[in-house]
Image (tube, rainbow, N blue to C red; front, side, top):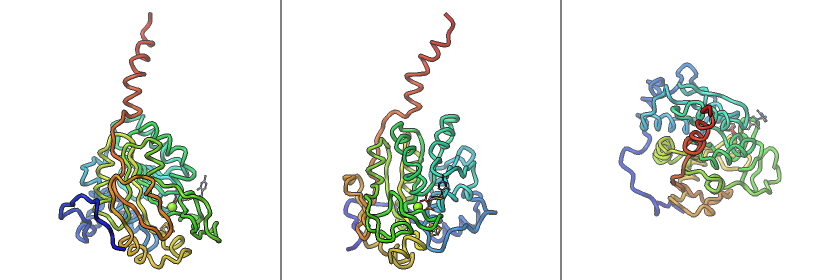
Length: 302
Ligand SMILES: Cc1ncc(C[n+]2csc(CCOP(=O)(O)OP(=O)(O)O)c2C)c(N)n1
Ligand code: SF4
Ligand SMILES: [Mg+2]
């Protein structure tokens, strides 16, 4: 099967990440929002997290985000290490609590652009409750979730994103549980922007991150990424490059696809695209409109 582009909108010629961009980012890391002194990063060869970070800093540049007004919040995990590499106010918080930290930052200073950048285990397993309620409230946050289907940092255990049948450190005979379909979950919870791309489709991933940054409300972008060291090896997916080849051959671009079709089965096709983009008042809009006037009135002495 070849990558299907049937439902795709045309892209401008300059939309793809190029080797020149990488060289430029490495030559001027600070301008690109990276902490030069922390490089090289800790991720394994072939891991998709570094690629996701590169795409993120490109999107920051494209969206003209003022780094002085940007906060990046991560939880714990390999992806959680992102917070240490971005040159802005960033927070490497506790496991599963990136979203509540981010919510506090956003509500304390709504002028900030607050981004959560963390892993599937962090955001969807231990942090799953925070995820659905932040989406329900339509908090004005951008959440970038690197989904490698496993807890990479702690040795590749299984979790709620682990695909049925997949072998992990804790599912040696194959996972038997249903895995979350993240676009369906976040959309049902109330997210107002939802997209998914793989780390191979960087032009489109970057465009989605730009849209998510510019979106008013809860924006969720799932980044499907290899963890070749644990998930890849245990499931005989080959080297990292073989996983990328798999993405190339099995990705179906389908913007606004029915969300039930977005399940990610082991060895199955990967539906990618922008799935949700809608308007709804944010939590802060509602508080300002409905609570502030009453609270102000109540504060006036009679
Ligand atoms: C309260 C708590 N429970 C468990 C852990 C152990 N722990 C650290 S990272 C992690 C999973 C990270 O998985 P994920 O978010 O998917 O990140 P990845 O490493 O795959 O990028 C776990 C379970 C912890 N640090 N704190
Ligand atoms: S263990 Fe997996 S997720 Fe962690 S850095 Fe290595 S390849 Fe990436
Ligand atoms: Mg993970």
